[in-house]
Image (spheres, protein in one colour):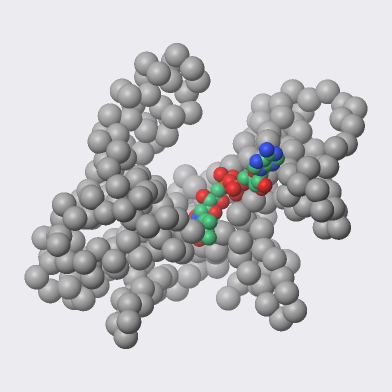
Length: 253
Ligand SMILES: Cc1cc2nc3c(=O)[nH]c(=O)nc-3n(C[C@H](O)[C@H](O)[C@H](O)COP(=O)(O)OP(=O)(O)OC[C@H]3O[C@@H](n4cnc5c(N)ncnc54)[C@H](O)[C@@H]3O)c2cc1C
């Protein structure tokens, strides 16, 4: 795999370099998706892969930037469901050559603060359920319905994603079939789905409170799909082990 990068002093969004070699595959964009794809193609497909990146540093939303005394995550700052044995952990182990270390986020991985009130998100579905019910007495049925809907949507996630990834006519035919369990959910906004469970706006705000965290538009404008897909990959109540990655150049706090 070849990553060709420009230098921080380059101001142009694109830098032109001659590409002398021939490549079997070209991946445009070096975010976590592009790099994982390129690594898998190179390692298991035996392909010679070129990754093109327009930014001066690779990584997309996974990189950090620094100013004197400070370090910021551009995007990803924690990842869920990376306990040993999980599929996501296996993928990270493969593409990272087993070199990624993980730091547990602790018992509470998120805290939503609204005015003077704060709401902790403890890890583990049942602990999350109990915490929400304690914060919102009288909303037990809504909270159970929300978690049941998350579980239902998630159970069809792999088929839904596979349908999206299939090419051309095969995707057009098989996609709707593979994604049938989740498509109805995915076509509704997060606000629409949550208002189907409860009229309690504070509860809706708490359940949707991670949207700013992910740099997403408001729940009234994004698909419910963004909520349940996050629940597997990062911090949702389906998560049992939210964690952040550490490396020698990045401390875990
Ligand atoms: C503020 C914020 C916080 C987040 N926090 C988390 C979190 O804590 N946990 C989590 O799991 N997820 C989080 N996410 C979501 C996560 O960051 C993204 O889902 C994920 O990183 C996207 O990866 P990607 O490879 O699809 O795209 P990107 O990371 O966006 O990478 C795309 C790359 O392609 C490059 N590119 C684009 N067009 C071209 C072109 N024409 N030529 C060359 N290069 C090109 C871009 O410069 C970029 O480097 C967060 C997102 C945001 C915005």
